[in-house]
Amino acid sequence: MTNTTRKPRTSFTPEQRLEYAKLTIEKNYSNQQVVEISGVGHTAVARWK
Image (cartoon, rainbow, N blue to C red; front, side, top):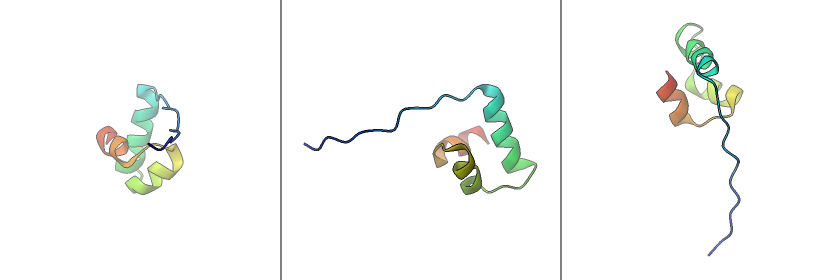
């Protein structure tokens, strides 16, 4: 079995999530751009949106 180390889970407040969602909706950022800015995964960005 391989021993892989995972990145620690980061917590975002509801306000932070809202701000990232607004970037995609109001500022026309792509999901990929928000992923790069925030450091979260694609799925999280899609859920927040």
